[in-house]
Length: 166
Image (tube, rainbow, N blue to C red):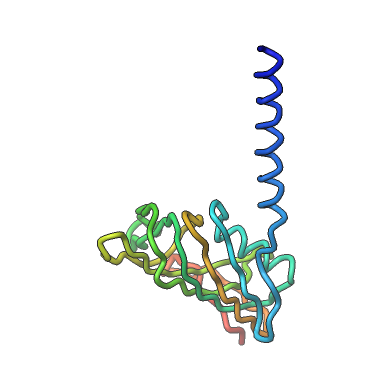
């Protein structure tokens, strides 16, 4: 009996690992004429996947738009503290996500805003701090630009602003 239980535990562990490996090897984006089309699935970190894409494909700068099902964290910029006051929303539909990809201190810099709706069709939105795909998927269009854009901290605003150069 113990051998049988051990066998099932080993098989369960192997199956779980196989599913994790299958998910990891799932193609998340394709190249299209204007940039990239990305499809993320349950559990994917939206921001991490966008950063990974920008680094892997050496994207100089881009605009993004997307939609899908997420767990999202929004932030409202507090002018006094110069920090975001966060609020989280679980299992919501992202009706719209828009933003930009640029660079800051040689790191990918995302600036993303969005609107999510709950099951009662109440909408919430603003500056997105994080998002993870919940049920379903998230589709993102990445429209690339031919110039490298940088974000620079501007004072006294206390915020990172997209710099268009001289």
